[in-house]
Length: 341
Image (cartoon, one colour):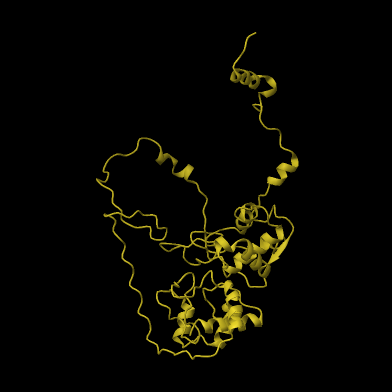
């Protein structure tokens, strides 16, 4: 009896007519399987499922599903992407490209969140949750107000600021002829040197020949009269509650002996202190103006700011929508007092 190696038997089977088209692998996809993967959404809203979501619901879902990577206010955490900010920076040397500053179509945001997020649990969000998250992202970019509702019916009416900031890529027709042929090997540089450092990405290797780029001199801080905070008796129970409320803020603001500036300034000694005085933090023009006008972070101003930051100070970089409950105000104020004595 003749015996053939297994791989010859396998090749014989693959070559047979019944295996010719599929190589013996897989099967024809079912219609429902194709439909499950057909998630495309067009800029005009084609492909969107029925549903809706508002900013406030989006804030809650975003905090639960997205904030661990993108920050509570879409400001990004560590090297995870920033989704908000960057308005007016596209012509800068180092532009901040976010949903609000750079992306041309809201459908891209909806499609990506729906298809790929949250990280590690893709496509676990309901359509209403996706609408709410997208509504919160565009709210964080100061493009809508806090009562905004996004739905499949209103989706096509909304346009991102950079909608007309892209051009058709016609390089294949206009430039392809310049790419082909023999490469020019004349008048080449004799050596290659590092002329600039990727400070933002921190990817340029350190070595003895690398030249550091000089940091710009910080602007001289305005001379202000120091305000000595009053020592008051604290409600320790309320301070503890305030620490819990502060979890809404800790993605951007830090406290403690080793606190450093983050997306927002560190807040040591903030209560009853003049605004805009934290060293090496780049404040918004709005806050600088308020500080020059004598703004002090006392209880009254803090309550007003934390209730509606954008209403209290138009142009503020703080994207937090505001506290809603009186007990939270009392607790966070007591917490700030405790960390200012």
